[in-house]
Amino acid sequence: MAQEVIQPAPKHVLRDERRLLQGPRTRLDEFFRVVRIACEFIRGFRALHFLGPCVTVFGSARFKEDHQYYGWARKLGAEIAKLGFNVMTGGGPGIMEAANRGAKEAGGTSIGCNIVLPHEQKANTYIDVLVTFRYFFVRKVMLVKYSQAFVIFPGGFGTLDEAFEAATLIQTGKVSNFPVVFVGVDYWKPLFDFMNHTMLKGGTILASDYSRIVLTDSLDEVLQILDNCPSEPTTTDDGQVTSREWEKIDGEPQSPPKTVSASPIA
Image (spheres, helix red, strand yellow):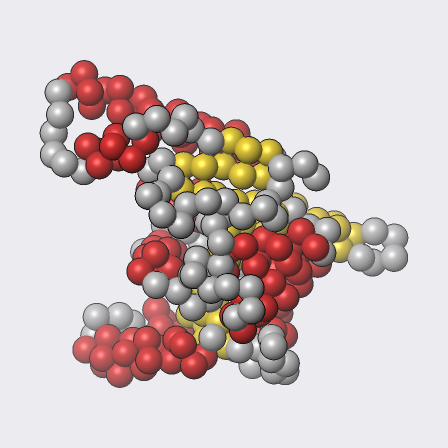
């Protein structure tokens, strides 16, 4: 599939977003900014509307090709594609590139929702459908709206922001209880210890909030969780999954299993 690139004009993009967050401007300025934001939403909706269900993979842009986590994300991207899902990322390098690369190598559809930044914003070359946004909040809507699960690889502030945005939307009932899976036990265990021993014991989250987030290094566990997502696989005569179709959801989707055979991703 040839790469489809949909992106805003680069001129003054960064300056415009800074102005959005610097207090009120003239009413005419604010009106045209709302129009630009609406146009950006429309571009995203048009680009992604006819694609099937996605699994969104978050993670650091800073891991190189020879890093262990890059290899894990590349392998998982391929396996997600084999389940019939589209693989969606933030479109950049590092973990995002690895997941897109794995999906493309496996013959799946690889999607990138990139963001215009002063650094780390260059899209990777393993993307079939690329949409570049100027506004973070528009981009985050796209990463969540078209996804049925979220896989969180090790990362920094941006990864945490995206992961807990998804978790908060699920916690507050704004989206269905889709899986949120953290991959990388050594990296994420201190965070889970903090949630368990400080947040849960302090009463700032409920046990149900904590239990719906999975931490694993197991490829089998991730794939079994994803396979329980509320979408219908399309198969060939010999049983090979080629894609997935959206399923109308009545009530909450099936809860992901917690105990499966553990085969490491590496």
